[in-house]
Amino acid sequence: MPQEGYLRLGVNVDHVATLRNARGIAHPDPVRAAALAAEAGADGITAHLREDRRHIVDDDIVSLMAEIDLPLNFEIAATDEMREIALRHRPHAACIVPEKRKELTTEGGLDAVRGHNYLGPVVRDLSAAGIRVSLFIDPEKEQLDAALSLGAPVVELHTGTYCEVEDPTARAAELERIEIAAAHGSAIGLECHAGHGLSFDTVKPIAAIPTIAELNIGHFLIGEAIFGGLADAVKRMRRLMDEARATRSASGSSE
Image 1: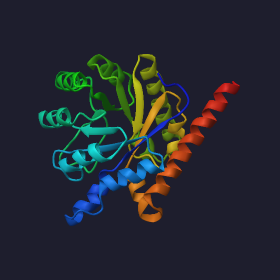
Image 2: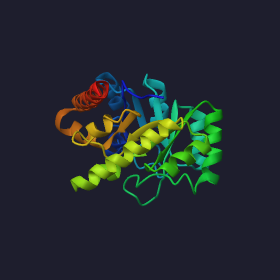
Image 3: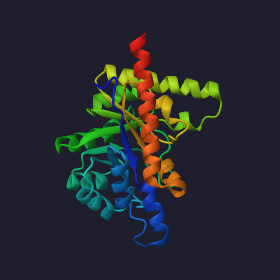
């Protein structure tokens, strides 16, 4: 399991598609954004195909698979429709996320404990097809244990609460919760990723956690691209992640 060293960056291009869909035209193209992110240092591309197709659409998945030479992390809800689409395209990875029709964005993690019966067949079928399955969950021991029992090799820890809370004491407590969860995940044999709401201001403490192998970041980077360009935003995020991991590694080696 990854303990220290290189931390992967997955760039989510959903909200390039959101902007495109506002006009119902072909511009801006999320595939072009993915290519720019790859050139700037991204290690993978994430795209969430929602039931309502509010941003990424089916053709985007086809194009991303065909044109981008990076692993695709395909975010989906655990529905029959999405399972069949994932099985048809066979991306590198599929991250199962909770999805509500009226939510603006993903709100919290899956309940892998209570959702065992409906998640199990999806995890099984995707894994059998050679797709690396991850579950987007809250940083709680019982959720990690449930993910392991479902056969998912990867979890993505929800960082939204950590990013949104303003009180320093509460944020520190949330950071500790994430670090404890990542350590537990590593101890039981899971690879831990993290994401949701991360920004230049919040990424370094998460990036410094040695048992997290990958961060997935989207909305913030696409927003920053308006002001300074997507390549510069990705490069800065990559640099902050590397600095945090190097500092943690140096600190650990000196103890």
